[in-house]
Length: 141
Image (cartoon, rainbow, N blue to C red; front, side, top):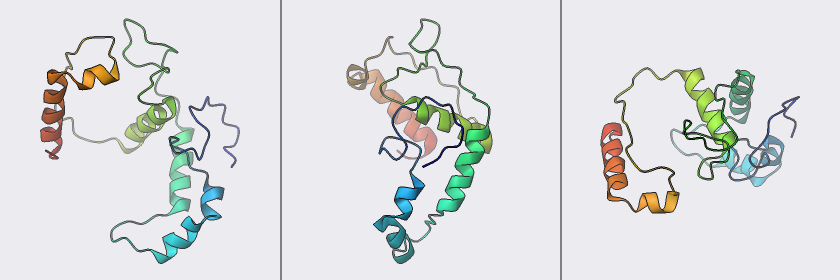
């Protein structure tokens, strides 16, 4: 798979299950290509060409997340985050800038101790309250 002249440090290789970048050549040569024409899931249109066009548009956007390599006392986000890869963060950031969602529901300060260990943070009662509150805001709880 060619990504052009992209000089991007990748969290995992393209096509890896944790990568936001699919290997379109691998998909076209697999049973996925056959299944996507035979299997019909109502309301879902898998258009690999459109997905690749969108990816190229997102990739052409200027970097929007100047992240330090490791966590700093003054910086919440960093490249060594083990919960959310830098590739995912870059794609999500570009998607937000590209699609420009138009409504901010609430500016919520998360008051949990730092640095945060993902496993122990999930066990905090306050964390559970944030999850419920966010779910209510999004209409999923």
